[in-house]
Length: 479
Ligand code: NDP
Ligand code: 2IT
Image (cartoon, rainbow, N blue to C red):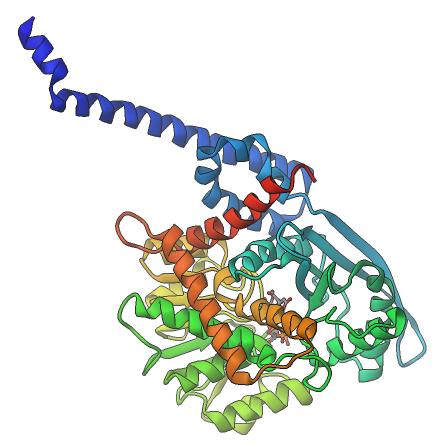
């Protein structure tokens, strides 16, 4: 008897019981969390049938934040996550316009106003024939967390159209933009919703959109970002997404004592993000060996230099040509039609084209080719299977919502400058951009570092982005 009471009162026994209890609690929590994820996703799929990109983006976030939500019952009771996947407003509208031959054309316009808990809706406009409601909702959903990560007061939104600017004359693009804005203008404003560029929407399109907005609303405000340098645009906004991506990747590399110096970099895309990612990576001492478009990729084993990049800028931004023309100018490079660049051996991969451009097989090729760091410039370029391959092989891997946030962050800085009626120097904007990217990286480390020291940037970005929006929603009541 005395022996038994000794055992019961001993620390060893107490610790043993606690451990068993903890394990039991842990196991039940784990099951509870998994049930929550399964039930949540079943409901999202049932309520949003066929929207596969939206399902994919939501699943990635809910898998990261479910343990956090289930640990804070008020978030469960207030159905914060359930509210986050229901856009505050979706606007879908007809965009009629006339082409150069006098034929009537009809496109569909979208604006998804996803979440305004921490600021006015903010996010780009995409013009691409693939645009549909699922793609708009996935982008607006991602944008909500990304904007929260920037530390600036911006909610999440996204818009666009299935209009294809390729092969259209400037006059056709202008007429389309004017018709698109004629409807959109009644739903946006400097304190309501502030659109910007994305795929197929660059400086030219923002100009036409802003001109029509100003004409109809009779106001010169910062309702769009990415404006021209002479009429309210921020210095460094064109560079911001690509430069910010490299600043973020620098931080990732530093966690392993590495830098860009001497590294081989594979980049996809050849648009705004890819061009400036290539420029910054090169200036940080890397050798950029690939660029691509939707028809194929170029491989230049000698690497890009300033002159070659200037050729690409001119080719893509002014002549609106195709990337295969690079090999006509630089014959040491090769063109690979209908292929992605991920089979080219590299140290660092920067996907800067579009969603789901790295599938399982591409991820396997990257790992086999020696790649140890993947930083996303595009939104959701890696499929869930590809992400699993990166993470299970211990690669440094960051999701777009963390590493491409420099673009929207600099849009936020453009909004500040517009409100203050000021224009900051390139050095000031660049210093802010660097600081913001470093802060986002720190937030990822804080919430994403696992017990074995591996940094799960997906988990880190999702939880850090979620907390701020969730707390704001709790504070603001049931709206
Ligand atoms: P651009 O329109 O300037 O360039 C897009 C590039 O991606 C082009 O080279 C284009 O090739 C290629 N691309 C587009 N769609 C596909 C496709 N379906 N398959 C293969 N290649 C494709 O857009 P951005 O550079 O602005 O955007 C690139 C990515 O970065 C997008 O995911 C965007 O959402 C994201 N992003 C952009 C930001 C910005 O500030 N602009 C900010 C944060 C993220 P092609 O000419 O053949 O269409
Ligand atoms: O995906 C993105 O973050 C963008 N296209 C930029 C959005 C913005 O408002 O600058």
